[in-house]
Picture 1 (cartoon, one colour):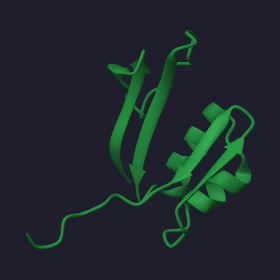
Picture 2: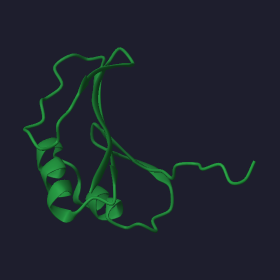
Picture 3: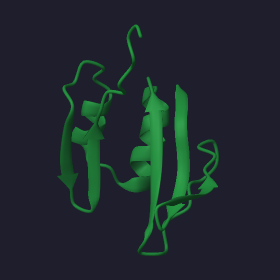
Picture 4: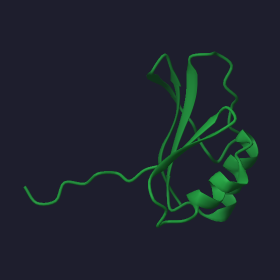
Length: 91
């Protein structure tokens, strides 16, 4: 698994790096959010993130499907995104 980004944001600005090999802190302020970008996550790493954040099983299932179409789903107070990073081809 490659971690693209794991950060705590406060008021829209990166405030702190998050080490996914350690326990993940909980958000305490209303303007905070945690962004975790993973590339090809393995089942055990995704299970740790799922357990910590209480992610819906369907969101985790979708996250493990590399051919899933882009989408946005709301699961309670979680927003789940499947996105593809744009890449410049040629000039």
